Image (cartoon, rainbow, N blue to C red; front, side, top):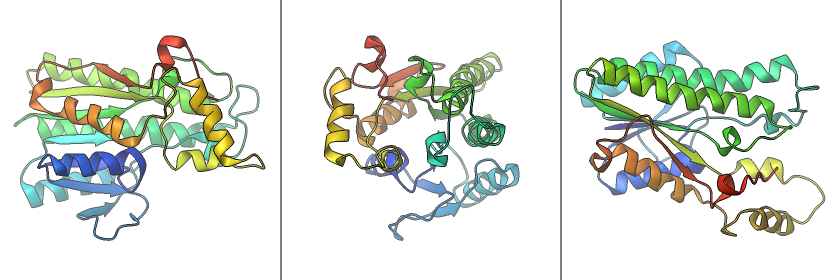
Length: 248
């Protein structure tokens, strides 16, 4: 029994499809309705709201009696605001919004999952970003929020291990992944295909990471095959981190 946040599109959607293919029952949550109305069960969910987390987890436990897997996939990039993300011009309002969704939302998910899983065990998989390894000067809000997730993952993993909870918490860190986020980043007068090729050429393996590539890493960490893996990070980036290559 799994909950996947941010499941209406991108990495979340691919993760749901893969988990279901492997036999899992998945509750899908997102603050946007999925395009496929047959994508059920679906719950509207603002991950920054404590009461909504209580509802989502409570509903899942009421319907299925347990929670085995939580994938904290929902998140935003400050680029969607179409305003500066650098240390000089980034607004406090935007910084707080991105931190609230990515940092606080993931924290609330982890906290809810620990409470729900501590009797029977389970797995938490968080989604990070290579921005925590490859510094950029123009994505401060996003980078700071993903750094919170990186530390949060290790803290939750150690806390659960120290208390004898059979709960593992791990991190999947994607690089440039071809999701709807790039629709915002590619806006402008330049040819879309040219922009896509420019990004691809910066990736050492010369191929985009696709949502399913990230989903396979999530599947492994959520499975019994990873029973001795906790507080760990799997980087899925086509070699960007080892080259120190950012695509922005």
